Amino acid sequence: MWYEPASHLGCSLGTTISNDEWSVAVNSLTPDATEQAMASNQFNQAPAEGRTYALANITTTCLGVDSSIPLLVSIDYVTAAGNVVESDETLAVIPDQNSSSELLTAASVTGDIGLMIPSGDDGLLRVPPGILADQVFVAIR
Image (cartoon, rainbow, N blue to C red; front, side, top):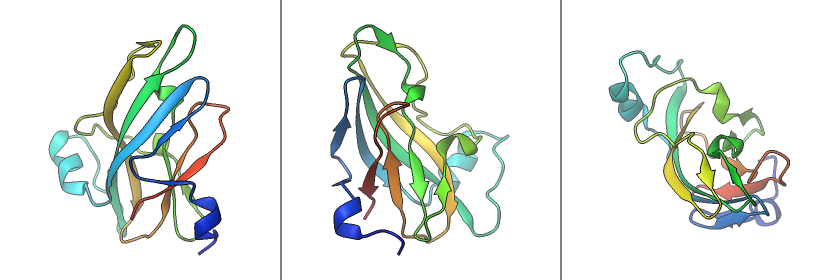
């Protein structure tokens, strides 16, 4: 693996990651959610060979002074080889999709972020709580 597991993971599923703007908890990851994704919308494209839909269930809380939108929080998948799969690369309607609606200070939303990841890969999630925030790696197993 490209990373040192003890020093780069930072946290495990369920841990809250935060800064001055956002609090993010990765509640769970379903690494093979192709069936759910395909059933949720007839126009979703089937994954390419060797890939699968994954669903990261997250809770985001706005901690900023005014308001903001949860789309400013990204969840990326980092493969065991070190390749990054960004959440905005996956264009699909997924079940229980994380909201893009504005949140006022202290408001939270829970929902799924879809990722198209390599099948059977033993990677990590990368979670920066906001656009300019430091990234934290989350172990998924």
